[in-house]
Image 1 (cartoon, rainbow, N blue to C red):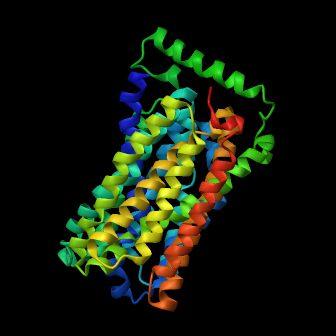
Image 2 (image 1 turned 60 degrees about the vertical axis):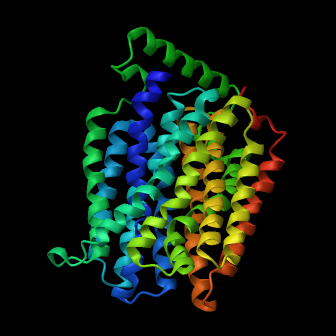
Image 3 (image 1 turned 30 degrees about the horizontal axis):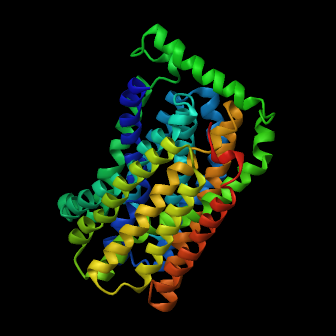
Length: 418
């Protein structure tokens, strides 16, 4: 376990940092991009959200292909194509080209996150899974921590080579993903049996433990893809995660503009200050994930974390000073990002193999429609009212639905991995 953690988690973490940067860097680019291209908040909100329509349509097929072809080849394909499309965002000139490239980015990235969740299930047994997933998912706040200052630095290249600052953001954060995709193709082992950095005895020990757990899970009878996709618990988890993702992508896509509204600072300063909520979230999610593994409890951890996140989102609607605004957004980010990895440790407690791949893809595709709803809702409400407050309160109310659902699952067998 220690060897697998050291070899896999830092590398997968770097891949997800690149993925999340390419998904949400439009949040920083829009500080200059909207004015340069004449886009309003509704156009921006729809463009950011339409990513998740492409993601939704291709998520399950992509994850099934990953299960068939192996993580090494398929993750490499995903990264190379999304890196190229992300860099091509520098060519956007009209709302139509903005929508088209964001949609294609969603198609290209479909399968990456659920593919990694499925992949980790083939390396880490249930009692270590929240640990593994939470450390992998710290890439989300770290992407925010790195993305803010990095985007600020790229803004400072504005005009260099005849390229605007917002275009440098897409180029500077998209092309490295192509390089990482090539590294994946050369180095990532598909399963414990392929890991040359484990001894033969260690490979057999770890693979045997994962096989035994998969055999135990399969006794539930839900072993085919069709059965998994129709499993009631798969749909419950989809709707558990949906409101959580509404909140996550509200933070991801609108944080820079919210911070600018609180502080009145320039683009570079806002990009740097936007890292603060993510620093808070990175520390919190590792602590909460480890505590969930130690206690063997999942659903109460999710319920409390998301309730805290909803409170932070609601408080941010009423914040009027820079300090209170950033503190409220930090609370929101910490709550959302602490509950998220624990929820993703649940599907592989009752599904395995290709069935798990299909189910995780379905859960993620439905949940990530929240990434369409959240940004579009905030943009439309802000354009109509001139304020973010109403939209933030709606998002907070939706997030409380996740907390209530998690409490309802507290006494279910799903709640404990043992």
